[in-house]
Amino acid sequence: MASRSGRPTGRPAMEESPWASAPSREMQREAKRNAVLTTAAKMFNERGFPATSLDDIAARLQVSKPTLYYYVKNKDEILLECVRKGLHMTLDGIEASRQAGGNALDQLQACMRSYAAIVIQPFGTCLIRVGDEQVPAESRKELRRLKSAIDHEFRKLVAQGIEQGLLRPCDPKMAAFVIAGALSWIGRWYQEDGDYTAEQVIDQCVEQLLCGVLMPAPAPQAATRKLGTRKAPARAREPAPGA
Image 1 (tube, rainbow, N blue to C red):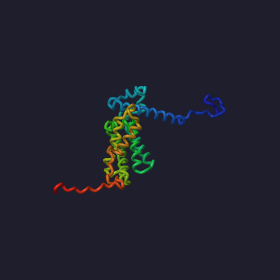
Image 2 (image 1 turned 45 degrees about the vertical axis):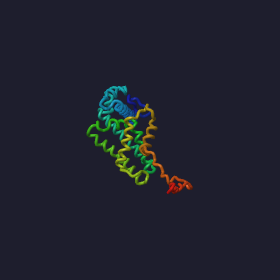
Image 3 (image 1 turned 45 degrees about the horizontal axis):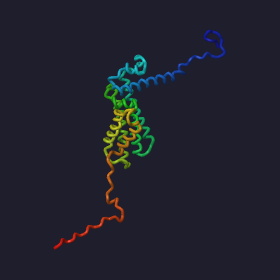
């Protein structure tokens, strides 16, 4: 076989295949796009969505603003993807908790811990702090559908816990609102450099929601009396002098 220059060669000429490096390029692009989204989510959480510009995000990443347009169209798309990632992470965490098995209370507790762990991560915090009100109107329907799916998962677990006699009778819808609302609020006040670690925050919040804050009612006194300690009958009154 002849070479490209016309000289014969002992083996076939090897062309550089575009397929050989395509996965690598695609992985690099996805990694860089994820870095853009993660950085943006952190900045939205720190400054708020309106106060964060593409110039700010580019500066934090130490790239030019035009470079960002290779990975995202605009700031609205960045926010949409950040919120969508937070929702999908939450649903994936709930599904994993359900698949782990156990009774309804075990699964509910696992789902609560998973939810709390996600709302203190950049995408989860962005979901809570920024919300879907600031994403383009045409995208809100999708995001609210995903939020509704999360709510229904909690409702189902509460209802199953009641059926199994593990939770006291209550309205599953209201209980799910309380649980998700309380755990979501962690994403607003939690600080990495605060007095409590993430694990401590999750442990205490889940325990408070499951156990409440009231002291258990004391056992009836009659049930705690020991044999042989029966109270003596009252003595009859003696007649008054001169009666």
